[in-house]
Structure formats: C-alpha cells, structure tokens
Image (cartoon, rainbow, N blue to C red):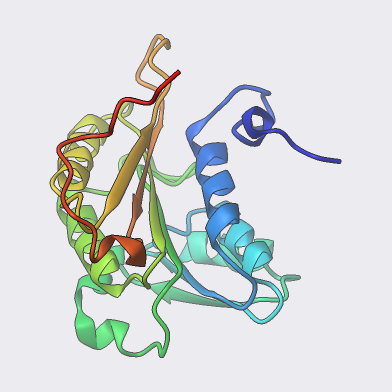
Length: 218
C-alpha cells in the first residue's frame, strides 16, 4: 500500500513528529549495504530503523555511554540482517580522526537523538559541548551526499541550551557546501521536539553562493 508524504511524517499517534520526519528522510537517502552511524543508541529504535534500511549487507555503528542502552539496542536488533556494532563511548569520539579511521567507509548517515534515555535516569543527558564536538566530527566523516539527522528536545531541563547550540551550529554552515532544513511544531503547550537535517550534497561543491531561495512562480 502506498504511503503519502503527510502520512510518512506521522508516527503511531497519527500526527506529524520529529522522529517520523527523520526516519522518512533517512529512508530516502540510505541504501542497502551502506555504513551508517547511530550517535545516540538509547533503546535502539533508530539503530533498528538504520539496520532495516541497510539490510542486507549493511553496517551500523551505535554509540552510547550507558551499558543498559547498548544491551537494549543489541536485543532489539538481534534479528537484523545488517551487522550491528556497539561502542560504549560518548559520541564526541567522532571528533577523533584516529577513531574514525578504524572504519574503512564513510557513513551515508549519522543520526543524533538527543536528551536523556527514555525510561532511564533523566538527569543523565547529552550536553551542548559533547554534541557539538560530535557534530563537527560527523560532518568531516560524512560521505558525499550523506545526511546528519538530529532530533532536539528543548522541553526538558538542559535541553533548550543544547537545542540553541545545535541550531546555531547548523545555521553557521556555509550554504555553498551544505544544506540545512528544520522541522518543528510550533503550536504546542510546551516546546516540542524538533529535527534538523544537514546534508553534504556533492553537487554543491561547484555551486555559486546564493543570497537566498528564489521566489517560485505560481
């Protein structure tokens, strides 16, 4: 059964959300057999999505600083046809070129789902400092035509600071070499999760800078 664009942005609630938006974007870019990175494994849902997109023959590298998160991820992905490799390290390890060089390929996608581990300790959260370091490393590592997908949570304690830092980082990227888009839901009582997609299209390397998008005729 075909799925229209709006439905692809909706989760189980039937309403658009940041995570369904990211998953739909990944499905349009990630191919079978690709190497991809889940920078924040958590309970393994993004890792599972990446594993299904890359199967068969894909490779998924999943980071987390909590052993319980990696245990949950391995269990959730136990039946996948892609190879899942888990790393008990902060995602900021990606800023280290020697670390990145341990893998022969450059990732087609790097996914960040920030904040705290659902069902875990809500005081243990990602931070602006380590996330920005990780994003910088991920951008260097990313394959041409790959994307970085980031889900931010401004509604929890510490989340607004991290979200603002990530948005400033994304806005600072040169439009001649990178594409950036933002998905958000403004009509909520508390700040809703938002998503950012950062692309590195190879077609932009020779493109001329533009002041802004041209007005489209109607």
